[in-house]
Image (cartoon, rainbow, N blue to C red; front, side, top):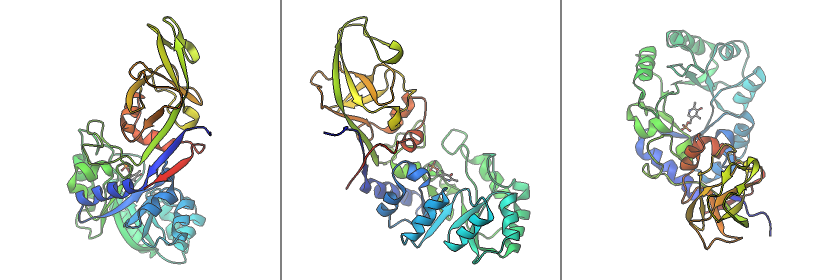
Length: 356
Ligand SMILES: *Cc1c(COP(=O)(O)O)cnc(C)c1O
């Protein structure tokens, strides 16, 4: 026997979720966003599972180069672009597409001679206020980019701060449209939330991240309602069962108090595996398909659960931490975070098993 924790990655789910974006944005290209090791699912694995992808978008240049070297011939976009002249040379040499979001990148394009012109996404800041040229600077930045001769193609781009919430994209769209009005270039605006909720943002190229992995970008619409299926299921087993009496406590700090005699299940999975340490008592877990609640603090290698709803549970009983039968979004919500963070945090020590 080995430690029973593993992450199952269902490859077919990636294809099904990719197709959901294609149905919403039927006349757009869909880039599959694979930053952060494909949101914890494994960059190479996800790329292999999606040979039909119109392209990929990522952050890490090494991963982008590796993906190109495996023979993927379509677009690979760097979402923060290049950070140095050497990286710009790599972008050109590996035929990567790059975001151009700021003055420093523009200046490198003006001053560094690239072996071949690159596909550029000129990023405009429409209210997120992280990256991108201010709307009033956009035309000047575009003219400078065009004048470099270093861009083989130019796409106008932005990223929404509130596509997932009640504020929507109205204000950002106004800013984008007034900054780019009359410019005859392709556009890329939409993340998962905008793909699913704001058809007017679809334009030429959409960027599907979280929805590809079967989690929801919204706090008030479940992945299931959206037709998404979980790609990752984090599975383990009970490795011990404790029978405790009223008044006893469980775990570090003794934060869970038994009100009556009860059975506590010990699950092989802890924060060193990527399970959120701040998940409070009551966070949902499946044991033998039955929903139970965590009881006591998450520790490095284990969590503890209240087995009252599942009296048949014993050492070896199957546990799902998130995925099939228990949406990662629900676990994230209980822990005060989002599905994105839990998926990305899957630790390297967790063995991954691909399932069809
Ligand atoms: C991460 C990212 C996306 C994908 O966002 P999701 O909400 O996961 O769909 C799209 N565009 C940019 C610029 C990003 O950084």
